[in-house]
Image (cartoon, rainbow, N blue to C red; front, side):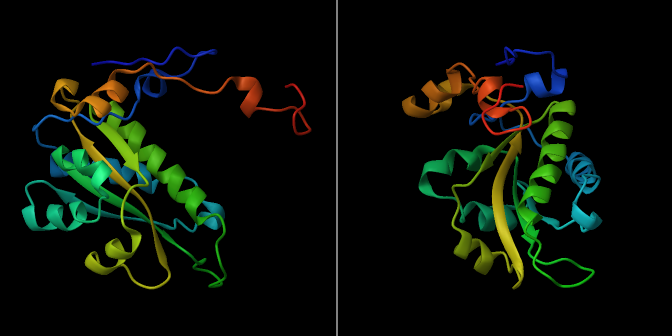
Length: 195
């Protein structure tokens, strides 16, 4: 199922085609594909080139590791257990060069994750990033050290048939993609000023 964005201005097809499905097939994602996704994330820009992103990854073939990540999901995101890969993005809270707080770490992890998401789209894979996971449980069961913050869980796989989803999720899966208008997100040189 494709849900190509109807954009107000032209954008690259990877951006227009990317969306966050909840229905995934049982088809595997290879180790090489996962490495390609992480390589794309690795080349994202970051403040002071600090590269604060870390990713904890489990392919479904690693039953124990996959279950460890899946156990961190909230009930409303149990559909993500059908994906071929679960991944957790993590942000290092301090700069390497001076150990001071890095208030841009979450921004930089977002940049790296968007690289990963677009690489997935280029490989014919789909991703769905989620805030719905238990942060404290993730710290505990995934062994995340002090000084690092869990950011988002990411389900990765091949788009599946929405008919297998519960009705409320199926409705969301089939709904039209919408975004706020450009005038609401982009301003001239002053807040609220037309661009």
